[in-house]
Each structure stands twice: as C-alpha cells, then as structure tokens.
Length: 400
Image (tube, rainbow, N blue to C red; front, side, top):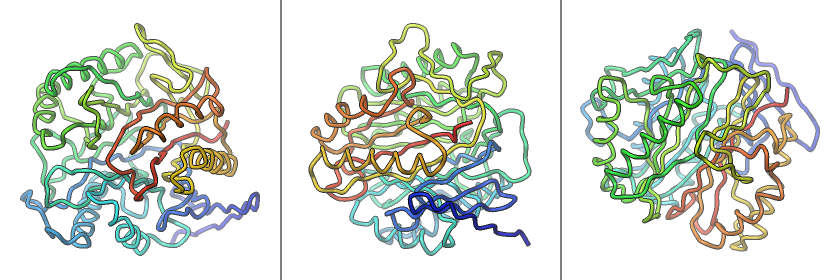
C-alpha cells in the first residue's frame, strides 16, 4: 500500500498534501466545493482527455434530463480512457466542467466532492453555455498523471468501449519534458472557412518552433453557434486526413466575429531547438508581441501548477471582483512556490463587457510585459456561477 505523506506548509494558512509515488501535491482547499486551490505535478507524462459527453458505447445519450446519471456516465467514460493510458481517476489533477445551466453547478460539485477523497481533490474550472445536443446537461475533460508509461512522443488512445468518431483520439499522453501552450488564434470568415484558416495558421505556428500535427496533445475550440459543430468537425477531419485527430474540446462562446477561435497544447520533446530557460515566451514570425498575453509559451522543465477557476467575490462590481481574483491568485502562486512571472497559460471566461474591459485594464498591473502567459479570452453566456461575470483558469510552474 502506498504511504500517504501529509506535509503541512503553514505559510498563509495553506497546506500541501504530497502523495508518495504519484508525483502529485494538493495545495489548499478551494472555495469551490470538491476542489483544491491548486494541484502541483512533477515533470512526468500527463494524460489529456477529450471532452467527454454522457454517451454509452453506441453513442446514445445516457440519462436525458438527469444530471446525476449524466455525471456518472461521464466519469465512467473518463475512467475507461484513463485506464487505456495506464492511469485512473485517483491520478486526476484537473477537471474542466462544461454546463448547460450554471444553476446546476452545485450538483456537479457535490458529485465530485464525494468521488475524490479529502486532501486529494483535483483543480476544477467551470463554464456554462450550449452543449452539442439539447439533452446533454454536462460534459468534462480531464488531465491526469500517466502510470508507468514513459513515451518519447505523443501517444493517442481510442478505447473500444467508448463511442468515438473514426480516427479521433479519446485521450493522449503528453510526454515528460518540454511542452508548448499556443494561445487562441482566429481567422475571420464563415465557420468552415474560418476553421480551416485557423488550423492552417496554427500549423504554421507549430512549424515555426519545430513542431507539427503529430505533436499536438489537445485542441480546444471556442465556437458559435454550437449547433454548427458538425461543420467544425468536418474541417478537422479534412485537416488531419490520414492522421489521428487529437482529443478535442468545444466551448460555445458568444462572439459573432470571429465565429471560432482555436488553441492547443503540444509536446516539444522532439523539437530541434533546446533552451536552458525554465520558460520561453515566443512570438512566432509575422505576429506582434503583446504585453498581456504571449502567442506561445514553452515549459522546458519543472513542476506544473494547475489552479482552480477563480471567481472573485461575485459582487457584480468588476473592479473589486478582478482585484479579488488577482489577489487570490498571487496568494496561491506564493503558496505553491511560484509567482506571476511564472504563469504559462490562462483561459479567461467573461460574460459581460464590463468585466472584459476591467480584465484588460488590470492585467498590466500584474504581468511582466516580457513574459505574460499564453491565453484565450472567451465571451460566454455564463462563467459557471450565476452573476459572477468572470472566471480565470490558470496554469503555472514552480520556480526552479
């Protein structure tokens, strides 16, 4: 039996549980029920899953109208995918939850809270909006530590007991070592044209840093409208023709111009270019650097920090909400051995123009303009908690 070592770091009232043999540390107790403030992971292979829906093996929706039944089916699907990649639910470090209605967040939280042991809760993030079918109430994707597998390149998995479009991976293992996070990119036009153009631009970005399609671990698309998802899927099938499509995540946003934005995660293990820096902040050729987000960030070594979604005080006052969020983020970063200069990836979900504008105003106060995190900012119907206005989902590294 593995020994659980509880290590208490008493600075600022935070504790960290380190789980021997699993390369995971759980930091603090988040205000989000069922989650930790942050989860620290050693530089080991990580499983990234697709966005799982409550579907059975035949692709039929389970528990129509019953969110508890749908949550159970989703966890069953995640378990099957993780098992194929020599992992399991105990090794999950991050869950991203997508709800049709934010009023159901407490049901999801209660389910997750029961499923994971005290002191071993994953980092969580939530967002709400239309999903790919009107009878689907919730979906999730997960990040977990891989078991004993130590691949030297990205490995894709398509378990036979899960429904899947032909050629689309349900999970991928990100090898230990360098990894890149590519900020959301968007080409304007009708949905098919915009999807195709954005994928081509992302490939050009990867090629500029010595990578290609085979290095992609997961792709996330922000789409409007979700009812046209099939158009997006058809363009992905054309783009990856003859190759495996990486795990995909789709989030509805409210943008009408552009209608789609796409971000991705890729392994940089086999890139020819090597760096002695822990982090590289990269502006690909033909792009312009920004002081508030980086086009591409690369982690070359060190432990990753997955931070649970931050919501502020939910006062409706954008200034106090954003100040509260960044203050909390600073505390979490300090408690996990990091700081604002060692953030690598941000996802900003905003549901109104006031919070969106305030975010643009406050970021320069906290970020080093030479090393801001890669990011996507998505205007959505709801950020998970009713009336919250904004949620920030962040990844950083422990300073080395």
